[in-house]
Length: 185
Image 1 (cartoon, rainbow, N blue to C red):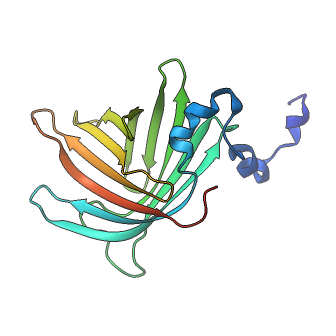
Image 2: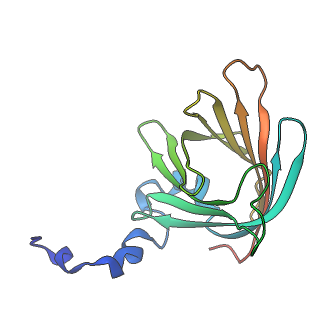
């Protein structure tokens, strides 16, 4: 039994406990690296196969402040068309990223979860010039690089790349062009 005001909290309070109104003041400037994306975005997602074939579909991305404003969480969705087939090459997405700023390494610890496709990634994200670059490794040993480029208040370009262990070059897997749906939040 809890002996505090929190003992009255139940699952109906979960969303209120998770979401925050803005960045935590302790690291507010650093938190804006991803905080600038908070809001709703429409996206054009293009998946690329190694043989050069590609397929494009619409999607949505939603960013918000969470965990007392100490993290940014987002949901990326490529919906399956009603009664239609799965998105070719990359599959349909309904996943979330938790991006937590870690002042001990002056970088972001990033976890992506897409349980419908059983895709789980861990990365470290940092500013690189005007871009944001996240790097990690798959369970198979491939290097991953996810980059936010061409960032403006109302748009960004996101690139998902892999580099197999024996390869010398990065290969583009997914290319996302996003535009803000609503005013900046």
